[in-house]
Image 1 (cartoon, helix red, strand yellow):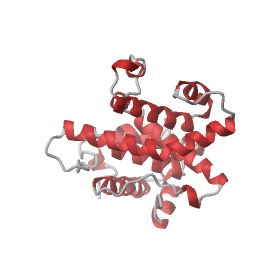
Image 2: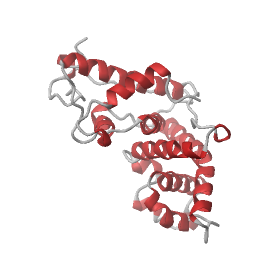
Image 3: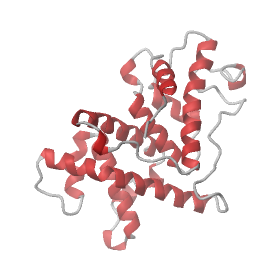
Amino acid sequence: MKMFTAAEAKNLDYTLSQVADCEASLYLEELHGFLFGLAVTPEPIMPSEWFPVVFGKDGPLFDDERNAQECIGHLMAAYNRIMKDYNEGRLKFPFDYSKITDDDFELVEGWAYGLFLALSLRPHLWEMSEDHTNKNDDAMPEEIKDLINSCCIVTAIAIPEERDGIFEALPGHTNKTDEEMEDILFGMLPVCVDIIREHGQKLHKKMFPGAPEQGSRPAGKVGRNELCPCGSGRKYKKCCGGN
């Protein structure tokens, strides 16, 4: 599965470059993982909340209003397309391990980091808070244990320095070399992503009874009277929503 079409990739590369510090913004694989995470999250998350994650705390530096409209249009088009893929049951883990090289696993790591950032916007939905991770195992349903373990594995891949502590907490995986640990974590990632996506679908059913199974919720569009997520301080209808 391609993460982005050639046109999307070109437009998004340009959009992500519109920052003072390129290291502060996400790169393409991270962005896809992040948008994937937004799509599977059952609560709508407004662009004004997630744009700073994409561009960094200092935000984008657009040349002018036309440039801002163009770039935000590229980003929202990709977001809406990924949301549509999710709603229609087409959004899957984007890597085929049988067709990638060892070097490509850096891209998988970046994708997992983007997913981690998105899940971290609503940690209570994914049992990622301390209140959930410190629960007594005996009192915890198996599906919640699976979800917590899945989020731990995503975190361990996204943030390598966290691997030792997380790996020790996983059942049956002790006394492994770093290479063995990495092989196990990456090998488990596709299943973990499925578990996270399916949990999001179950939550969506509970939160929005009667909605289609995949959840055809609104794609988090910016209200015309809200502040524009580009950071200009102007209302969206007077800025990037002007066209």
